[in-house]
Image 1 (cartoon, one colour):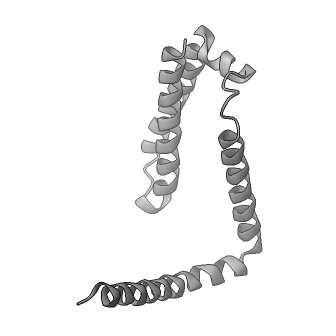
Image 2 (cartoon, one colour; image 1 turned 90 degrees about the vertical axis):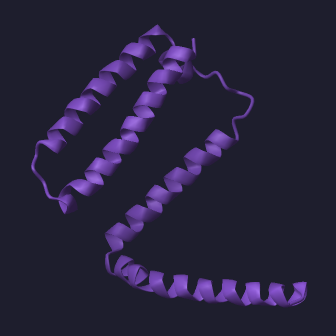
Length: 129
């Protein structure tokens, strides 16, 4: 096979894969349209994420702002320690609630992400001095 033929096969495969993805997402899109509150909430959350990421990306030179100084100092350590203790109590309460996997999955995943950010913030506050 020549390179051009492989290239054509690759393009055809990519288009077929795109078709499969679009068809598989169609049912979810129909459900989202049937629930307008969820649709607008997801659009709003996506907009907030894009704005936060854009703001972070556009602040390359101005690294030291007021809120950064407040959480990287000695008091920031205690703030993150208190937040980690609250997170641990909340996760223990979630674990002892005897919920099934369908009810506990989403809160546990959100708790996992919150815990990662809290521990990273704690490390940042300790090293950032």
